[in-house]
Image 1 (tube, rainbow, N blue to C red):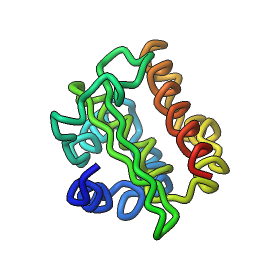
Image 2 (cartoon, rainbow, N blue to C red):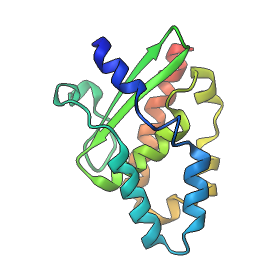
Image 3 (cartoon, rainbow, N blue to C red):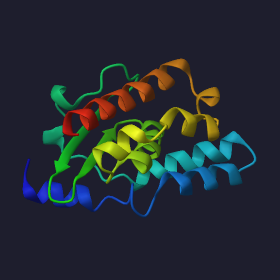
Length: 152
């Protein structure tokens, strides 16, 4: 992976400026799910685009309804995982942003310690997603947890 791309990964707002607590607070602010969906789509617009050269089968998340690519690098110097996710579907990019808000720029131990299922329950996410989208989201989380365990 190029040094330039890793620097670009570290510049993503997810995991630093945009954290899981911020997303939870904002989602709870909205009264209906139409507004929440719009917010999730807006989160997806905040995700840096993944260069086409990284949209490979190796980076493809198996189990997602839409095509989703995940790139994860381990920054040994800072003991943190740096991630980028991209999809052709805006809502999926927003869902990926929610996941990155909890996992990006964290140590592998912090990633494995974070109870993402409880977080999803707190924001009432799965009751408003199709089963296919929910399965895709869980596939993304499973891949990230696998990588975190690999680097810990």
